[in-house]
Image (tube, rainbow, N blue to C red; front, side, top):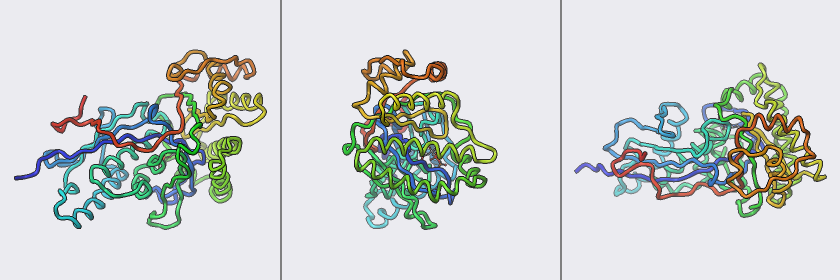
Length: 390
Ligand code: DP6
């Protein structure tokens, strides 16, 4: 009798926010970067993608992907590359063991949910592709390590390769043309430096303007500053950042994080035509962080921005009152503050113009911290009938 069983596996995967930025591809098809990068994985209690991967001969013949209840196109080269690579690994173990069900030949049904706005510049593609790859690897019972899977997730979205690990993660750019050495590795687990916190100021939950994929292509083609960044600035920042993480040296960590963000946005401005991801609200967030650090007499808070205006402010738990508390005092009540017990502090030392721009422009906050990598879960998004659970 034909096997119509529904095979399935589920996982959650985290968002990561880079402190040494990936910007530029030497191979756009394989997502091979022009420089290495480092990120902090954020807690899945606040930001995560939950994905169930299933396969069955009873499913429609083509692979499907449902994200937040909406059908997604799976014919794109990136999703196809992930499916192809994972099926190839499964078929190799099937070839070695004839008793294994031939899952690699079955259509895939993927159902995925984010607990945060998709494409708001909150690294949703990173969590999304990491969860997709991890869920299918679990479904196929692949013996692959997170580093091996990072090679596949990278082809979905570059930054996704870093979301296969928790804690502090480096993506080593590699030099080979086939991308086999362009992989993510753990710099340190979350437990090494568990006091790292992040305050995200959501400036816009709208879909972003210039996508990272096209933005970085135009940068590579037109910016002269970019070359110096890739060859000189980033290698220096990589070494400094890895050392700062190893030594749990927040001052160093914070300074490199801010310089990196500035360097990345400088090459965006040097792109022709220029790309502007930072807006006046982002600049007000920079000003507020500078004022907080000035008052403390050292770097206790560090801003960073990706391909959008949202600010991510890293700080250590011991400074919660003088960083998050002060920002809360300045902004007043906004969605998100209730998620953690942080009391508002007097914000008198902050630039009043910056505070008023922030008040008008920030729609919500997300209070989070360093967290763990993908977690296998029994909670499925696909029912016994093979249909998505509503
Ligand atoms: C600014 O990983 O989204 O967030 O590989 O084209 O999918 P693709 O790009 P993506 O770029 C992220 C860029 C960044 C910096 C970073 O995360 O390192």
